[in-house]
Image (cartoon, rainbow, N blue to C red; front, side):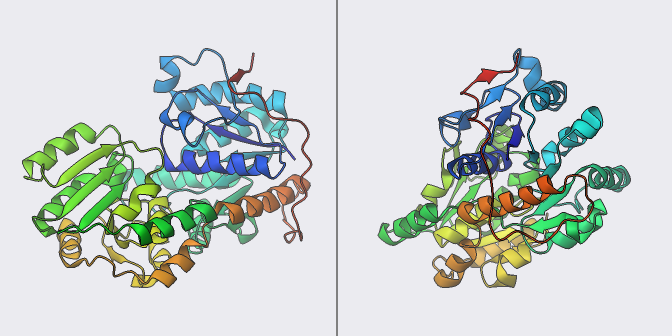
Length: 400
């Protein structure tokens, strides 16, 4: 079985990071899993993407970066015709438009598409005038995407309602944001860090973009934190300059540190006490899973249908309404380090491992491949059967 994954680039992003890990794991399992990149730039080329073979079209200049979705729609069909994959893996909501375009451009010659729903579909943050066309777009996705993957149990209903697809076209696979070695390393590091610090050490991880609403976090931290508390913000993005200005304006310059991009941010989580998430919308945030694995106390906005299940309805963290800096500040004020139930937190984290998810994805893909022209998908086979057809392309190989 040949599984083609397509990504814009190695630019940092949770969807892209997990997709690169899946490709690497599938190859380790003996699957022919080529990777198509619209362009080759980005920081993740040197960490999670290091040494990973990929193919890329020629002529990917600055315009490809500015119009990356159109660029991929223009160049990917040729790669699909050349590679002739059995299944296309659409790694997240961002790539759904590319997958639908492939279906329209290639018609019956397009392989079946397995699409992971990586973000909230309700999108209550959208203004009312945008919701109707957005709902129509979801129904279009449901018409053309062959099978949908949700990352936590509540997403089954969310996908069914949003995309209008039956239950037999939806599979729940816990998001593979962790690995067994990573969980063990985080737990070990947590036990060995013995430094003494007067205040509480808060941390946030994420791209500095409007979705993450870091401005709300800063305002809430300014209201709820003590003078001895600190907040470290890990990640980079277009909003960083104005967020740094806001932190200074709030008088938080001595308490808030913008760390920028970190190759493997989960590894430094054991140095902190409390994880903050202030997003307007998410799917199953990888950072929450990393926080659970590291044993941090968690405060998060209720930014998707899955958040309550993910945090065991309050047993593993506190949820506050989206967009309410006052309630977030109250939660910050009463937060206690080392208050997490270590065993319950670990048990939840262990559900979301790459080792489990990679094989489950392959089972679903095997069913899709075997039933590409059928409407009904039979029960899962007892084991994954994959036969490599040939080795993947060499790093940076271009499609001429």
